[in-house]
Image (cartoon, rainbow over all chains, first blue to last red; front, top):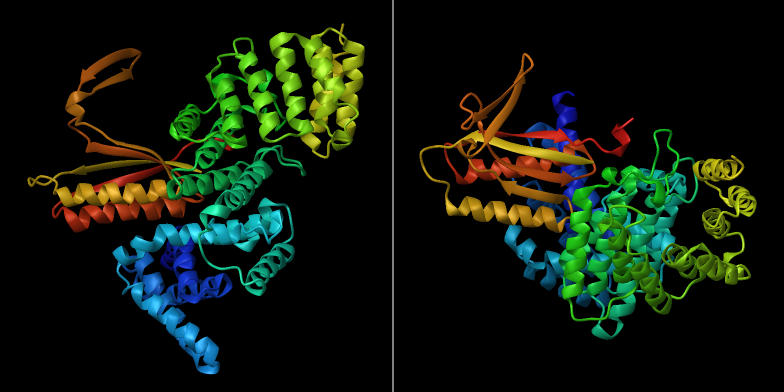
Length: 422
Length: 120
């Protein structure tokens, strides 16, 4: 790498680290997320021109902020010249900009937590579709390029670019304010944020399409977002619950895939390959959740379930009765046939396969589960445990026919073949 | 991607100034807040440690200090998107030493931790 290239890489690293704070600070000055992002990009372009020649400044983050802020104030002034109404707003914004202080790191730090939180809430605003929220969140808070987001979601770059442009336009058209939601609407808005982070995580954890079973880098992205949010909202039980859930689930990533890329289910995983650091972090996050005097929600309860697995040395010594009970709680908090199906598995493990099958069979008519891969997969698993191998084979074959994931299909076929063995 | 960062160096005769500790705590707080710092701790001088080595089929246990190498001072485990990001965080850390503890010299070695994708 020559010197220019090295500087360029260094600038991009500074950008990834600083861009969310930069955009957040600028959005408060301009009141417009789209404009804030453009101003931040402008500052990046200037840095890319100047730093390779003059060297990287000592406080690169503060430099970017100072540069972008001057341009933001210019923009606000220019806008103010055109329209009386805008002028009033402009003065207001300018006053805000001045209150923001000169580019000293401390002045930025004083506001940065709130600004970041506002940015997260606006990127995850319910006026946007879940897909648009995910793309915008990865872009504005994750600091990912459009190209990286497209790769993560197996979409084309123009499609993601358009999704982001539309999302920013929607926020501007609907005049969504850059603010932390009022206490009355906080719970609902926070749900929307947590949903997006978990959606990103799951897209990496159980890739719904494509040839790879997992995309760990996307999980890592979601986990960084979750940890960031936990630092900003330390008193929200569900934020810690979600962080715990992600850390605990991610601890199994290395054990979930075989040497050929094939999926390995929980029961067959080599637990020595589970990531002890992530388990420890997950259990710590769960403890933090438990210390908050509020009822646990769906994420904290799912984290409790994941913790039961993390604490167990084997499938046999897993506290399945507790897991089955937790699924009952989860079924009340977030009723869904999928939760009931998981409860069927836990019940089968705790009280025998026939008990699990009884529950699974009661779900067979659910329209929401029609075409759902896991229904025949779970039935196959329970039937195999009950020694009903011919029926199990049919279920695994059915599951193989339903999945869109190539790795998963191969696994179900192998399971079906096992049922034919003497 | 995970990176292990190992700080080693030679301390000047002056004690480390309290401002350095404050600045390190602040930077660590920022990295934790950003969700990238997974674990970190300081290391006691190697005089408190020991070395188990194997040479010519023979195991040897040697008490510290390990005089031939620079003292390891701390470790940090980061989870970042690229090596450049790791370099930037490490640069910030080393810069604090330059700015707040005149005479200190040392280095941070950045090593990528093997992940599931590297096991094959």
